[in-house]
Length: 250
Length: 223
Image (cartoon, rainbow over all chains, first blue to last red; front, side, top):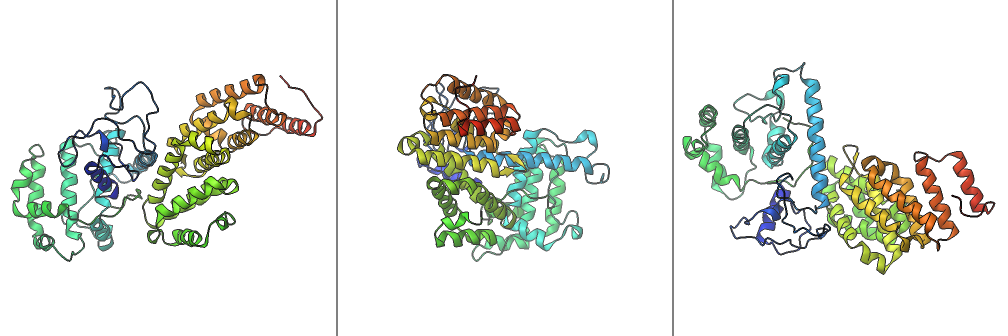
């Protein structure tokens, strides 16, 4: 996980500590911390998070607002969100101009996902995957023109129209596939077991799930052993620090 | 910027140099704190500190693909901003440095060539504070106000013209109604009022008139 996300979980364990390292604007809005314990609902005093708007409690939200977001924001978070938004918009313009020339890759004009919230959410998920050492090693090892469909993971195209479940599943599968490029660890037999997985198994699994995108329960059971091993080592995957989005790499 | 970094001690200078060459090997949080600390004491430094910071931000983005420095810088800046009233009470000089520094950051650090939206309201808040009657009687604060408006006024207005209008109502009121202002202050206020009125550029007439006031060839309060 990126350091940004890692900090968010760390914050959940220590709700009372003064934190000025990348506190996510969402972290204090969750009712329960990651350990399941109920968080205090009143605002925790953080640098820059004083109540500047009097008369309303910190927890005040309206249905029209963006959701459970604190009214006073952390500048670091805000700037990163701005950056992501403008990167996504730049991506959109880039893909617009590419449309007519590269129809194999891009969806037809009418079928482009344009909702900014969705695009940003998808881009975040893509960023988490690209922020891994596995991804770094993968792109160094396998240049784009050498990639074989099915064998080599491909970043899902955020501009294509998909249902939420379908998209989330594609991301999950993509990340599982990327694990094949995890750096070798000193300890941990689970990583070695990953390498033993027959790629054929993974391909079958992928076909299974794509046909029935509705039932998520299919996921853990269909290919049994190989996927549960992947899930085990998921949390152990070495991650890099949060990085800014650079040009689309895959 | 080349002379700016000589304000630092040798250790920090080395850190800064390394940050350009290989950002991953440097404690960027420490570096950002060093820059902020220096900016709050040294008025001549903080004008250009924004440029230095932007250089580090870009180096980190290009060479390490992270944004640790920027994030730390902004967090620290936010802390200082939140405590600005206490800072002003403690030392007007430090307060003026803080405003200069925040505006410098706003001026130089861009995201995909756009100004930092997150800093727009804080900058306005600072300028509003400088336009209050108790600040207008200090030439140090007035000077800061007009200098910053010269630097970032146009950009600020583009991002939020309503707040700029309100700010200028305050300035106009101060100029016309406040009795205890020095003549230098009045001159500076007049100049900035005209500067904005002519689209954030210096017209020849305005320039000439400022000079005349300064030389004492004109007197009295123009309306």
